[in-house]
Length: 333
Image (cartoon, rainbow, N blue to C red; front, side):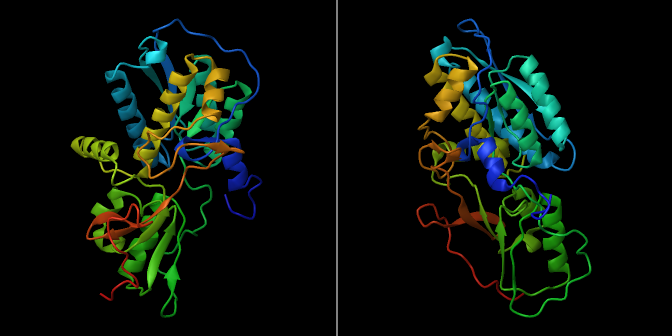
């Protein structure tokens, strides 16, 4: 989707989608919802693109959400509902708007209390619009709405000295761009990403360390001082997985919904939506303030700046969360 041709802007997307610890709440109409018996499982839809072009990000998101559910259930479930355990209902958006929409329909028929997960793109937009028709709370993570880096850059660099690059694209395109620049020995002062699809992914850093070195990113990342975030990081590593920001975002999404369920004391969708609208949740693993939705935007959300240094992703700004000082310009090889 290009900036010029898109009929729905990223701002419109975030206004019509419930974005997990960082954006909005949808489904504010008036449709009936079933109230479950006290202590019976709470069905929670987990909608991620685990196949297709966005599958890696989707799998990472599902991993974070799954770990959160495991932890909540192990700690006694939703106490306000008599210790009800969360029962995940897995859905594959197949990296397409149609796939996401079909899964929302299935989840609504299965009477889920809410849906978490996703990717802030046309997939989420379509899915959130369908969820709104059913008064179905839909909480998704923040991703990239537009792919603004052109494909086909393998052998076509003609840049002058002293330039910088600002990519904002999905994982595969990002890796292609960074590796090609490195292979072609393109010299630049810096690479500064905007929600970079690979710059905040340990898969890229570990598999292509030379191409990743010194890349900066402005993205949603976990709080490196937060013990809960570090424990989650270790759990992911113990499972033999790399991790991206989607792990931490989706983990926080589930915690946000669980908090809303506790405060609502009900699985009735209207009450969950009201609890989300009035949320002041601060138990996430992101470097955020308390969750507060104003006109569909979470005022507590804030990205950080990271940089790949010595095969690791370090926070370089703001200083409150920084684990390293930025290196700029990029040193000459």
